[in-house]
Every structure is written in structure tokens, then in C-alpha cells.
Amino acid sequence: MSAKFGPAGNCESFSKVHKSSLAAPRWIADFGLDCYEYQCGKGVHVGKETAVKIGENAQAAGISLSLHAPYFINLANPDRDALQKTIGYITAGCQAADWMGARRVVIHSGALMKRERAQALETAKKSLTKVISACDSQGFSHITLCPETMGKINQLGDLDEVLELCTLDGRLVPCIDFGHLYARSLGADDGLEAFSRMLDRVEEVLGPERAASFHSHFSHIEFTPKGGEKCHRTFDDDGGYGPGWTPLAAEIARRGWSPTFICESAGTQAEDALTMKHIYQSFTELF
Figure 1 (spheres, rainbow, N blue to C red):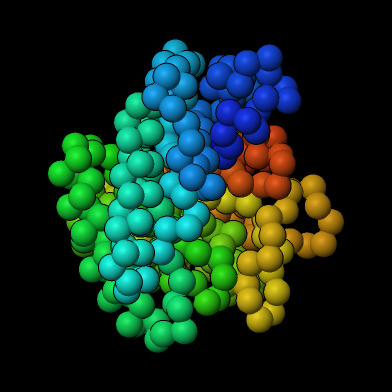
Figure 2 (spheres, rainbow, N blue to C red):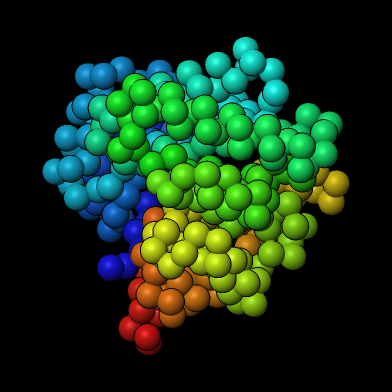
């Protein structure tokens, strides 16, 4: 077992380099990568025919798929109508993922909405329980939901909050966005000691099996002192943006874990994902 690496994107994001955007999975595989996260951040607009074809092409190319559900999901919103919309967004994402053969759907935790963190978290836990029930009732029990750590300080979704959400059901797997954690900590969550501490915490809460196969987003992030995440950057951007990939790659290789890393660099997702893979592989030869 080893870690997997690939870009985030959708069919349209590859259309400039392919005559057919459905060629993306083969292009990703030929580029030397292993996985691909289809983005539905602005809504689930992919139809069944296209989704099925993406899945067929990914399977033929040996690319594992995941899907990012709409960004406007807010598990922490106490409004009943808002919860029904959230359930709809997530089940629509699961339907598209099922058509593609994707087995993981990444979901946002939500915003605090001027409430205490503990209060927002309790709301999110109740909401997620109802989301899981809805997914199961609609035939999506085989789809793994991945609550994501968030990058803005006023959002629900630090590491401990996401891990607590994941304790609600043994099928839940965290999506640990190390760029987001770096941004919301104002640069503190970076380096070998910080990464080791965070991974230890994941294993402590979820156990070794789920910890070893966590889902992840990674990119360099620019942040502001008051808000946290400002924007994604590339590995080549000047300015000292973090977090650093090399110490995290070393720690994952040392532990022998096999997470999925989706690169969300600003426009160089595939190129930076390949850099991540090569650095990681250099450490697997040492352990």
C-alpha cells in the first residue's frame, strides 16, 4: 500500500488541453498520477451520461475517483430548510459519485454563524446524522463521506472538530486539508513536529485503519492575520507560502500510511501533485 496523488478539477478545467474533456483520466494517468477529484463546488451539474463515461475512462486508466460536493453546504446551520438543502446537495453529490464509480465525497462542515464553536459543532453533528440516514435510505451507503477541515477562522472545521464529526459513524473518513489548517493557525501548523502531532491525533481518535487511509487536500495557501485562508497558491509562487510538503511526505512514508492526496494548487494541480508524489517516493525508499 502507498499514498495516491492527483489533481482536483472538472471536465471544463481540462478542456483547454484536451479535444475532449472526458480524456482527463487518461491524461492524468499518463502524467504519472493515480487519482482525480471531480469538483462540484458550484453545484452538481454533471449528467449521468457524462459521469458514467468519466468513470469508465478512469477505470480503464487506473485512476481512482473522488468527488467534492457543493461548497455551500453548511452542516452547522440550525435552520430546518437549510438542512434539507444541505441534504439535497450531498445526496446529489453521492448520486454523481455513484455514476462515476467514485467512492468518496468530500463535504464542507459549515460556518459558525456568530455562535460559539461548541454550539455550532453540536448542530453539525445532528445534521450529519440526518445526512447519513438520507444517504443510506437513497442507496448510497457505499459512498464514504469525508468532512473537510476548513481554512477560515470563522468556519467550523478545525482538526478536532472534523475528527469529532467522524466519530458519528465508522464509515466517515476525514478530509484533512493541510493548507487550510496552516491558514487557520496563521502558519503554526507546519513542519515535522506539527504534522506528527496532527497525525497522532487522527490515529488516537479514529484508530489506525481509518487514520492510515485518510483523504487529504494539499496546496500552498496565502492567509490573512484576522481571517485565515485568503487564496490558494502554487509551489512556484514567491512569498514563502506554506505549508511545506517535504516534512509531511517524510512522516507519511515513515508511518507506512496510504492516504489519498488531492492537490488544489492554483492552476498547477497536476504539476504540483507530481512533485508531491516524487518527493514522497524518495522517502519510501528510506523506510
